[in-house]
Amino acid sequence: MAVLEEATTPFTDQRPGTSGLRKTVAQFSQPGYLENFVQAIFDAVPELHGGTLVLGGDGRYYSDPALRTILAMASASGVGRVLVGRRGLLSTPACSAIIRRRQAVAGILLTASHNPGGPQGDFGVKLNTGNGGPAPEGVTEAVYARSRELERYRIVAEGGEVDLEREHETQIAGMPVAVIDPVADYKALMNELFDFDALRGLFASGRFSMVFDAMHAVTGPYAKALLEDELGAPPGTVINGEPRPDFGGGHPDPNPTRAVDLMARMEADDGPDFGAASDGDGDRNMIVGRRFFVSPPDSLAVLADHLDRIPGYRGRVMGVARSMPTSRAVDRVARAHGYEAFETPTGWKFFGNLLDAGRIQLCGEESFGTSSDHVREKDGLWAVLAWLSILAERRISVEAVVRDHWARFGRDFYTRHDYEGLTREQGDRVIQGLRDKLGELPGALTGPGLRVSGADEFAYTDPIDGHAIEGQGIRVTLEDGSRVVYRLSGTGTQGATLRVYLERWQGDALRHNDELQEVLGDLAQISREIAEVQAITGMVAPSLVV
Ligand code: VG1
Ligand code: CO
Image 1 (cartoon, rainbow, N blue to C red):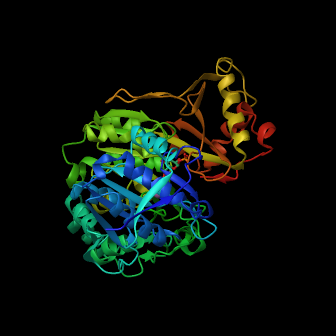
Image 2: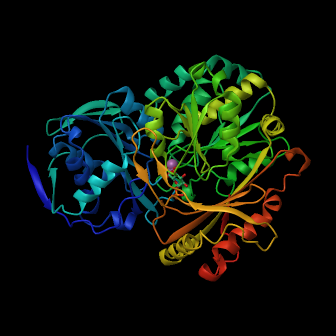
Image 3: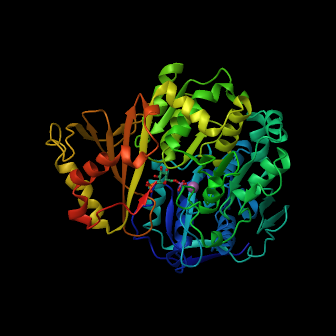
């Protein structure tokens, strides 16, 4: 085989974020840029020599050339075998499932998740390890270190010709390559967890309808195969179901602001009973009822309350976890059920050890991510099937399920305010400013008259391996128990985004109307006042409210 050694420039970039390397397409198309990072992966993950690699992505622009480069580089670096999704497609949770079911040693996912795609959009390379989860910090650090010293990468001359449109087995310079059905393993796994007959019964009842918005991203084929073909939902249940390189020009982030088609349908008088959407790579989910949005922390809490009634989980739920900025609603459910409850930093990789150790079976983040121990990633469609299971059993509306939850546990009013488009320097100044006054905040009286009762910066020690990490967000609590959390986004590709998370628990939630932002209005004001948002950023209000 002819292995070529090509020159590349050592990386001078900042370290990859929580979700691997995520950059603009323009940055990725610089000569040797993608190659540098990919070679660093092959060098830093020795298991790949002779091992099986799973390869795919959300189908975004630039995926095709990148797939072909990675295949030819894998061959040159001695990878044992590559399983690649047909048309280069694999959702993040499906990739995780395939790694686990087929004993692969790693996965490379070409995705920038919910970031927009297209020539002006973003691209990304994400590394998963043999447990099917995002590479832990030790591995990403090793890749990063290697990327900074690399001057050459290895690639075979042949390899650009693999037909990715059909399932078949082939080879590239001696390395076996299988082009596989992206959906089959995932569908089989869902069938093991959920009672498909019960879900079929729900659709067959004629008294239930749903719409799933795939946002022209990777979940279209998965949702059609599961909901329409397998469970009998009528054709047309899945909208925007054809994956497109630019996601149809949209922003594949499943929240009420971005999933406009779905929200419009759910507002209609004769709208569907149940709505859901997923993001670019299929790991996120938004759940909505008719004219009723379910906040992700509430969705997590409701799932925790019902999980042991779903076949795959009966009698084996021991614990649940949430990321720190996620509301504490799920903690109350854990207490009621006698489950252990964990609070982890933002980012799915922090759930990995707890899942591997069997300490938790369910986990979630406020950013529309929920999943269980069936994979080591967030799983958008899993959450949809879990909600369908609840609805099939209880035969009441989404709104009734959530209102019943609030009546039993109280309500955690919750919202996230994003201040986007800041410079890095502005973002850092906000966080540093808060850090500097952590000591003087407790006892301080805020403008709206509430006193601060506590302030700290979240640090985490992994209960399984003892790994410690600091600087994971600033937490401020008020005397009435409300909480304000501040952190900077780690997934953006330009500038900085300040995320401010607001929450207030009320036991008599049913007495309130649904004016969420009103209930949290004073907290929003307090959050800006404490962090001096206007003085530092010039912004008087968030640019995105979720
Ligand atoms: C965001 C979310 C975080 C999530 C991460 C990756 O990170 O807040 O909860 O784990 O995206 O999600 P940040 O640092 O921008 O706040 V995904 O769908 O890109 O895997
Ligand atoms: Co995602």
